[in-house]
Image 1 (cartoon, helix red, strand yellow):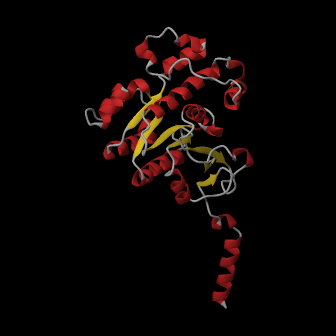
Image 2 (image 1 turned 180 degrees about the vertical axis):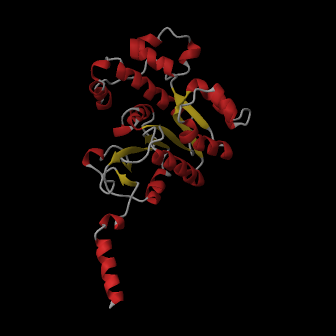
Image 3 (image 1 turned 135 degrees about the vertical axis):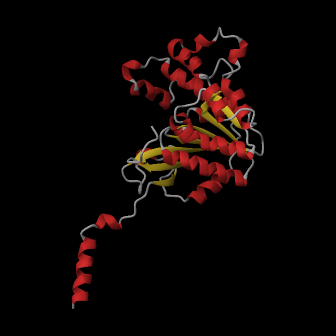
Amino acid sequence: MVKKRYLLLLVLWIGAFPAFSQKKMAYRLYDARGRAVSYEKMLKALSRQDIVLFGEFHNNPIAHWLQLELTKDLHSLRPLTLGAEMFETDNQYFLNAYLSGEIDERGLDSLARLWRNYKTDYAPVVRFAKSQGLPFVATNIPRKYAAMVARGGFEALDTLPLIEKALMAPLPISYDPELPGYKNMLTMFGDHASENFPKAQAIKDATMAHFILQNFAPGRLFLHLNGAYHSDNYEGIVWYLRRQRPELRCATISTVQQADVTRLLPEHRKRADFILCVDEDMTTTY
């Protein structure tokens, strides 16, 4: 009798705390239509591409962890080239010196302009590239030139010497101010944004696309890390890639955050080929 009473109390106690039995999910993967997909299915699809753009939130630890895991797994399936927005083109020499062992991490940190979250978020991927002898391409335009465009438009770059123009996409670049992503920037930043503001974004997108293609080799998969806005909705970098090499197979990943990751919200669908949906309570790296 005592045993039965104990079991009854235990059942009632568990029932009073339903949250204890709920499955907690830090993230979930979806396809463009909002259907949940396994990592294995995504990996298989991405391994068949020529270029993969991984759109991240710069301070999201789940995105950075998945970037490292995806890098390792793609490398096991295909010859791989890596590239990243987080390295500017004038730092390629120092990045190469680190990859070849000429300088150590302290030397890279002192010579290159590394992002403040480099050690926690990007160093693991760069270390893996070094350990496996993989090329790693600095694709982003040096920030001072993007700032020049933000102040004075594309024309501000015309008087630069050729040695400096070699650090960016060939001028003049194509530019469509009607692309939704560029138009939205004017709305997002309100009075702080001029018509040159999205042009600064475009020169980054064009430069990243240019150096991806310049370092693309048939038979190798190029995995590129960038902020999600640079490739969301197949705009930004993707728009420039397709204008120059429409025959290449290019796939995208985007990162989003939701309170409930078990169902992708409609506004996030079709954002990319695959969507990494992360719990919005996830701790950030900065």
